[in-house]
Length: 486
Image (tube, rainbow, N blue to C red; front, top):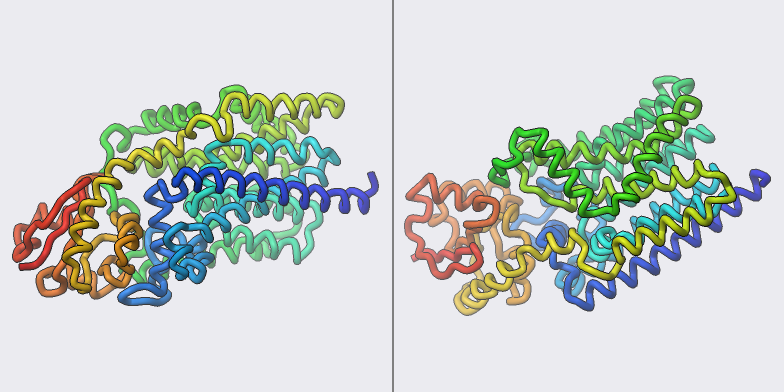
């Protein structure tokens, strides 16, 4: 096929995959919403809170972006989520999730077709990813994982295009996708580093100046985020202050690896994992002649984040491994591309059929959804706190940790509370002063006393008898306690 003809055919692949992914994502989002599961995960609600607090806050402004989470998901949703309906139900965040993943899948499919000239090789990895029930659930929520998947795939595709034709415009495009990747989730940092190394090896003849231009935007983005975090919280990087280390994994690397392996086995069919492992081996073999083959392998660097988190004692989260599943499904496409052209169609259909049979997209609950619903009973119990608060609240600020109770702040919108009714970590000096002497700053305190060992206010109350002096415990339910000043 002539280069011009392949380019135009590649554009068709892009449009077909983009439209199909959007359609599947929208169908999945409708299915999840019809079961009232869009905001079932507490982080889904917390992401909406962080986006909204940029304007709806006691201290509105740019400092509200500075926190534990990276800012791109909240920056994209900051204006739309000021609309109460978008905030209450999260549909603008879902639109961002569907759009980002669909764009990334389409870009990678186009590059796969450009490399191989095969529709099967281009479409099957996208079909595998969009058929995965865990991916479908996440893309139906305002969580940040779908944006991670999308930006990682976009960065990979852009770097592959730059390696193929190393123009300044393609390098700039790749650099900004890398910047978006490192501003989405922390898994993006090792992925971006691995992608840059692979691209530097492939384009080593271009010189270090060209690689430096590629690195500058993501490096600047990370430095800006760290500076923002320091300006808003007084710390360069918030790491482990928001959880109590779990002894089962804390500083036990073998136990961490075993937990991650178990999580992957729960998320993906073993045969698909084997196909992905074969694709990883093929990438290594092909990289001897074509270093660009290392790019798909770079996505496996995402595993560095859950390993480091669990090693530090972070509570186990199976959704941290979904990026590895996405990488594995993409690598299964590499295995498919290495097969004889005549057998690709049959093998591709078999792969997709096996994946759907083993993990029905809308069948039994996905492990990520099961994990998300683990706190349902606590959420329902906390409605008792909301009822009491609704009857007694006088409109004055409520001291509460957004790091632990961001999800409850979202739930409280059902009783008419706004984020500016809460005094939290994002309020800078007001928060610091309230921690020193709550009774001089607020009339109300909400404390998470149970989840992950309790929040920072619970820790203060345990070590200081004076912290809650002058406050009465009004109600407690689901581990959430409400205090009122006498």
